[in-house]
Image (cartoon, rainbow, N blue to C red; front, side):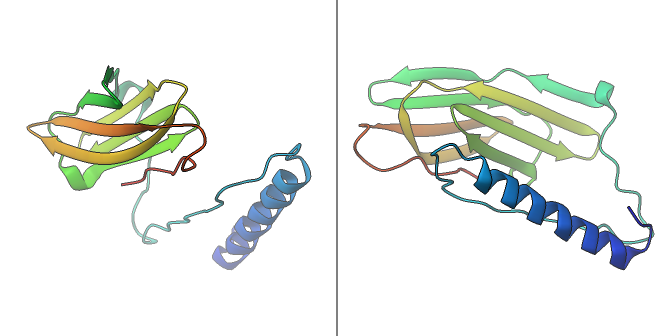
Length: 146
């Protein structure tokens, strides 16, 4: 890959095209529900680094089933709600929180059910996500991002 910023944009675009093409050719009868990318560039004078592996705090969220709801509770002390990101992929909920020198990574395995996120709260370092269980013939799973 080239070192020119404009060439890097072309390289990123080419990689995305290859990924989309490969995915569509090899879907094996499956149909993608959503496809999306976000490319973020840091200012030229800043260093955009991921935290060193030793600085990442991996927590294990608690997953509970209460009546027709699934509740996930994760402890994220010392971060603000706006610094928390979540993604639902298959039966796995990923939680990432980054603030100053705190870097949390969590994954929760959810029950093999159709789950629809209905409520999220964050108070005193405790994140709580509530999902509603849906019968198989109702709404498809939606992605959760925050």
